[in-house]
Image (cartoon, rainbow, N blue to C red; front, top):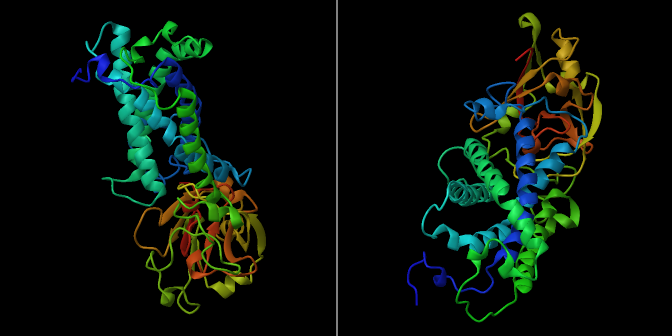
Length: 411
């Protein structure tokens, strides 16, 4: 029996072959492309070129070439793109693992390079395997709130995505014609171009290739069914048993919908949010500034908006009814009749996005509020009492809670 993994006879599974690999490859070709595009959209939604406080990858250089002003319509845009990104990523895990298993003999094949094209293929394969495992692992850890990797998730996942997709694109250019050829000749595996995946001494099969693809597809459907529900409210959320924000709603009543950080976790004390202590400082043109207590905010014109909350971790809520002061009205209080950018600062003293910047188009939207109420009641402490920002289509971390200061002007 061959003992070296570089020997083709070492790998005896009868499942490996061009047909099995090509089917998985075509699924990943579509799925990973969608993942990459929705990931880029998520990065754009943070408005990283607006202000340094929003930019977690300041050395991105040309990798930020596509950035644009994130829109506010439709209000569920980020809920859709990021929910798709995270749910699809988890759903593709069985497909990715099966694909890696199907091509593992190639990682040990000798000689390392038979031609320039073969060398490029081997290099793209190494980067593809390493990049894919890194991206999917860090993504799952972020979704599960397990930050055991060194450094910040944002730059690790962002730069890793570009390396992975560059290798994926190179590999797709080299192998897509082969995969399509293999799919056109499904019944004649040995006539396919990529015959090195077929074992010269296969073991007895215990399952057919069709059955193996069914197991992979079943695993993906299981992950989809136990993850996707956190993008919905009500009974469907309880099916998301593999997600931290799945299961029953965290409480009842008007404030009984999902949150990310509690007031206790953020170090917000009742003493600093009480009516006697809390003041909102609004600063604008030529240093004009006003200090507003909550009763003073309540005497301003109040408006209502039905908006969801959507988080980078993939969970979201359906529309909640928010009521408060329009951001553009607060800008007008300090001399900005035309909406401008705003820097929002929270009472939260530690952690990412305790300060966040919003673009002028987000301030201008009549649905963008400094919310004081939700679903007909005062905000709860965990939902940002005494006041929080809510903006259509913005990632959850830009909807700052426990707002203490707002500075309007060009950023």
